[in-house]
Amino acid sequence: MNVTDIAFWIFAAIAVVSGWRVFCTDSMVRASFLLMLSFIAVGLIMVLLNAPYLGIATVFMMAVEMMVMALFMVMYMMNPAGLNPMMMVHQHRFSIAAGVFVFAALTGLIVVTRFSSNPVAPDAEVVVGLGKELLGDSMLIFETAGVTLLATMVASVILSSRSGRFGEADTGAVPPPLEPGGEPAGRQPEQASGHAHHHH
Amino acid sequence: MTLIALTVAWVAFLLGMAWYIAVLDGLWAAAREGRAPRAPLANPLYRCATILRQQSNLTEAPDLLNWRLAPALYAGLAGTGVALVPFSSASVLADLEVGIVWWGAVEALTVVVVFLHGWSANSQLGLIGAYRYVAIGLPVMLISMFVLIAAALPAESLAVPKIIESQRELWNVIRQPLGLPLFLLLGLSLSFRGPFNYADSADIAGGTAAEVSGAPRLVWEFARLAMLTAVATVAASVFLGGYLGPWLPGPVWLVLKTTAVLLVSVGLSHQLARISPSRMMTLIWTVLLPLSFLHLVWAGVLAL
Image 1 (cartoon, rainbow over the protein chains, first blue to last red):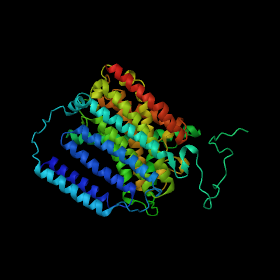
Image 2: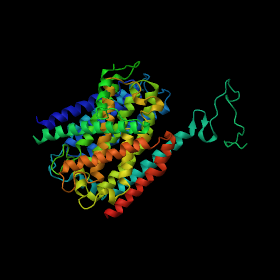
Image 3: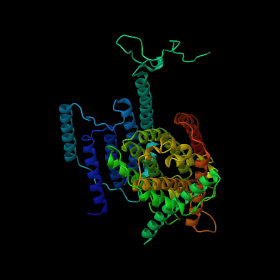
Image 4: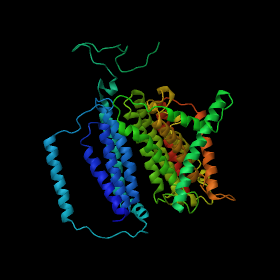
């Protein structure tokens, strides 16, 4: 057992244990960063497999992604900071069944598949090769996927940010009435047409 | 042997530069207040002793694991950043083929760690600092990504030693003039100083560090200085040719260039005013990010 093997088992243990803890913790922020830790361990395993760019890019992407995810989850939920305990798992029966099924299917695939034993030469220029592949033969696929994902993100932010807690975002915020069916609470705007400019 | 020597040099470099920044900060503060500095060289050490004599504060129901880990992780991230940089053509602690991608990961993880530091204290002001920091820290990180990709173009490599070697004829600071100024802003943001101090500023009573005292406080303050050192070292290597230079040996050049970059960074952090976070967001997304796009296009056309 050499250093690489020991490192692999340590990273593998971190990935599995932190991935499991995601479902035991009671906070959205903690769940996000436990998931990040799990992905970082997987990224480091990819570095051990002589894929340095993909491995470290995974670390970097996951750090940004989980940070943004934690922030957005807290923003869209009523739990003000993610420090209040809350139940992080839902649909117990369905998710247990789905988890067992997916685990069995993936494990079955590992057992059935014959993995090729084709070690990469230590002096192979893997990063250069990856760059040529990404910006050569596969460029159309990656660029199409990238632009589609970006459009999806922009569209989802536009759709989700329109309807707010106090009504549609583009009509201006109107607080709820103090009694059911009454006038909106608070100071009334002088013009109801949405123009907030006052000229005196 | 070389590994041990390099590790010792790495630790000495981090500690020495942190002390140097603290001395500069003291001198600058004294000059601004128009008084003579008192024991400027020993003052950082007195401050260390003062902080260490304090009790470690505890808030009500903090996330103690993350709260105690965050300062150490922050210092560790700064350390890995410095380890990427070669002291001379043959001596680099972490000779990574994808060095600047790891530097990108250091920037991203720094945002996570600073957020966790403010969040886990379970205190209002820390939380405000944490949220403000993420809002500003993430787009500033994007700027530095474009700047670093531009620096990798002439070298045709993501490794820091190769980027330095590509500057034998002409330093990147001349070839890509926008790079260094934009990267200096990253330094102020990653160590939250001056105009980019949205995490730990006085208007929120210390922000993410508002509730921290004793040994964790010392680690946190050292980590901020170490992170500025890491940014300055990377800047000196990526834009100012690192260890390259006539007459003097390589490590001396690296130290000279790093101290110069640090002097400018500390100056900027004391001279520039901080604007409100929402205005800074507008400035970053409408002015600084488009500038970094332009910079990348310029560098790309030049590299062709």
